Image 1 (cartoon, rainbow, N blue to C red):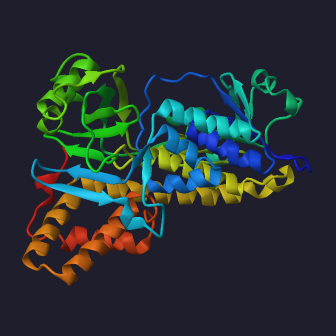
Image 2: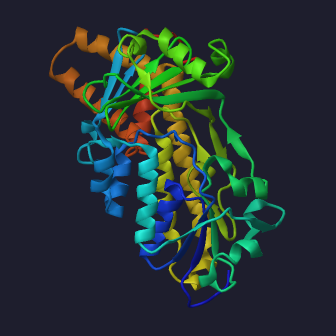
Image 3: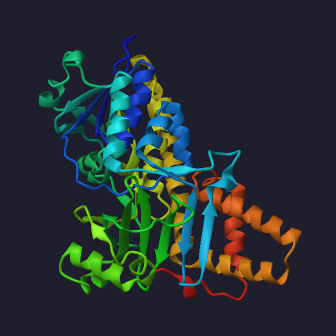
Length: 432
């Protein structure tokens, strides 16, 4: 990185929420932030349900009112793990730590809002596919990245000078990972997800709450969206999905029809969007930054759509990364050490989310819930109520993002997973 009294130049590849959030925070403090993006977007994007930790980011960006206008107020999440049993996580439990609510958003409008915010704050947007070249070393961390001359020519304000830092915000495309040969730790699940928007479907209660439904195989979601729409999605094993039809439309509709907790309420549903299909993967990059490059959002890693951590991590990581990038280019000489700490935080946080998600997939969280309900019925009263509120606050706090890395919350979850299941076996409630 060239020592200079000039403002830092940062090239951000990708204009999704991660890239746009990073650009907004950087531009505000005087960094020359340029977003390069090819403009391609699928009609529907997964990640419509947000968590309370994001509300804090919206407030930092000064856009919460605008998010509220395009979104639906979300007070919590309901999990139904059998036709008779449900687990309600109210975000009111995190009051005093985070805002006790979140939003469900239509992604097209939401993503446009974040990008507009970045441009309003002074970032530049260039609609073009970015091409990069690599000066390879023995390890990706020691390698350097540069924009091709053709791409650099599209940024006239830099007068042919390379950026001080290049950020991969390309999401699942993981452009720099492929270019640098960065490996990743992959999770066990390799599901497929189909979803679409529907009319004539009642919203779950309390109004705005999303619903996660454990099915015979896999799980489903119901997310209320503006205009009385309901996003309905399924996450199932690929081979299992094929039993319900040859196309994504057939698979989604037939699985919905077989699941009573969706079909009974949504018998008169009318699909008003195309069916979107995504590979559901669990992946954490082995390294997420080097000498003059870094990853943010899904480009670094993604654990699972369960509990909606994806968009949360994208924007929270962007804010964190923006905080360590110096305004002046000469400060970039010390940046690799700060980026290493950023990567440690990212891996730790993604791993914490994955750990929490695993409790839902393997049934431990539902065994804990069933044992807690049984204990409260046997020993009603003040002490049981206090225990229930305490556990609820910590579980909701983790699911909201606020306490995902909190040592005590993680210890409590682990202890309950070992000793708080009563006589219930997690396998009874596991999501296959």
